[in-house]
Length: 222
Image (cartoon, rainbow, N blue to C red; front, top):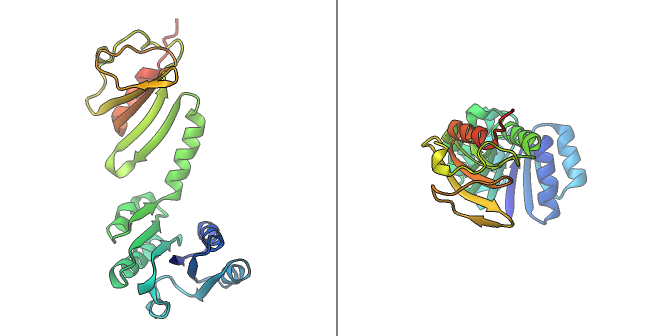
């Protein structure tokens, strides 16, 4: 594939090495001279020193022939402009962009970017999953859509054991979609009765999911 990478920071450099090793035809734009030198020494790529939004550089790299664009600078304003250039002026079919600040995710998406990733949000999710991994795993979370999907394990002495789903009065904005039990799974009805060690898949509005998780993981202290 012909791929353009904008920015060779901590994320960009790793992406460049990986794409280069897989035999892609790479073009890299990076304003830092030392980083350009590092890429030339360690990766097979055409390197252009300058700004990710410099149209003189864009016009000289046959951007219209690119299959994909990675926009990875740590400047969201530059990333927004670069996405616009790549998508609207050169018609690059697949654009993946970094959002340095979570509040800029939607602005970058509005440029036509096909995928927007915010490393700080992903890092938060991974750390929280590590903390909660004994009883809770977040499968998917999208702040701007207020949506979340998790798997919660019912404690062996959990307060919900022996109760049916309809008796637990879960918030309307959540759905119990699947329960994993004894190596198998079930699609539960409202009359489904919970047991200890059940792994329950919940999806819906973030706040409602969090309340449902608290209820399923609750252990009454006596």
